[in-house]
Image (cartoon, rainbow, N blue to C red; front, side, top):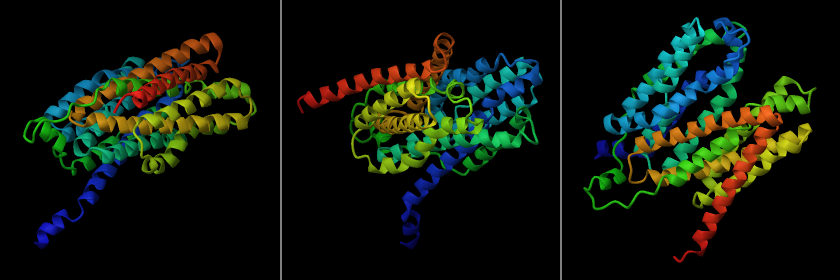
Length: 398
């Protein structure tokens, strides 16, 4: 009796340990992937591109190939095991980072970035692992924590790379930072393969008929739109701040860039605990904040105005992502999580690539404030759709 009690006394503690381990491993593996691309303009002259004219194109290479490969890796995870494919993603990143650090030409460096996209996919793999182990509110919280680790890496990784650049060039840092996904893979070896959830059991027909899974169209559309509306404002923010506030130090401009992600870091978990509604209300308020915050970039010309705009943008980003996590948790019920999260990653990458193309095009034509305005218009369009859905749900008979 004592042995049985000791095994089952704290199942929640074991679950939490797995969630934090997966999130922590994703954080450390993301350091090179998110911290080094901002320094492409410093790396490429070493590789034979003295003006770094290929920096913008190379920036999106891992994103494009990561999006193309994510659905396949997700389906393979459902077939061969989520833990195995999560380990594969971490080891794939380590191999790609070593190759990038050893590259001595633009073609070899490009090939390494292609491999990073094809062999990586740690975010989709982590989502698939958690989706197989959890469901309902527990899965929603885990997805929020995973995104929190991604935002933390996005904020802190470029700072760490910049500090290390005093002793080691960003190009060669790829080799050193390859140790991070390798160490993550070693840590993940100790995690169990996630057990089949009750939803999976029902789906296989051993416990009656499962309810029809929730359609994925709304989830995919939400993912694409949130990524597009926010990412489109990123590439030219520093240029916009420099044009409007020429005397502002570069560090302050960097802080403005990071501010929305800091809002998510500081507020996401507490907001998650307080949300008692379905996914639609936070999405509606989130897109409203995104529209206001992004449109403010078009008109503001003061530091105070930029701070307020970035804070409002951060609130909108946080609410939209929390609503997205709720919807993803609902959609994961009754279906294989690897394939679903792999496809979701495809739409996230597609939104990022579309945002990069749109930002480049409108900046060339209208200047650095235009990309944020485009993002605001996308948020307004999404807000209109979300409000229409909300009204129809309220008017429909129960």
